[in-house]
Length: 213
Image 1 (cartoon, one colour):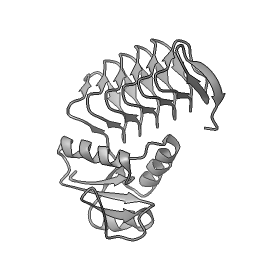
Image 2 (tube, one colour):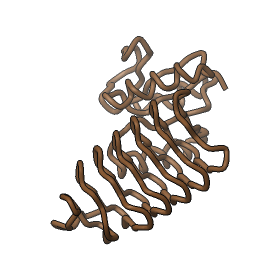
Image 3 (tube, one colour):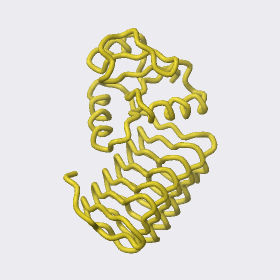
Image 4 (tube, one colour):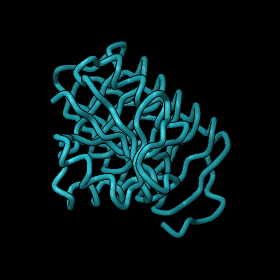
């Protein structure tokens, strides 16, 4: 497992590359991105390939493992599915500075940034982002394709359903549920459950509207 495809050549891709290098398992990393027109480009001192041709070219060179480095949950899910359909293997990357209990489960394709904490009994789904300094307390259930932004904190027993976003520095108190596709705004404090598709902000968090997710 020494060749890695990072799908997404943007700001998040830069950080994922740093995590991959810190993990130290991969000898070579390359990027693929729709913004690339033809092979031969460079991004962060790595080769850059167009999504349309890149997968097959890279498979021929022995690349098998991939991770999606895109912040938008819906786009990340689409690319994750595309990678699997292309017979690539999703891997998880957890920065060495993370504190992760052995009594947890983290799904394929999830990236854990520096200084995250994931405590005992937590279950993290596939293709998630646990961003810098996020805290997932004991017995939380985090669904697939979720993004916990930098500094987000989930108290014990919180459930976050698929495609939800918990914003910068937001706090979810123990036992609450954040519904599918919901967005919790930066700095919000969630005292009660957030319904699917809701956008909740403030202290305490109140629903403003609903997304189309």
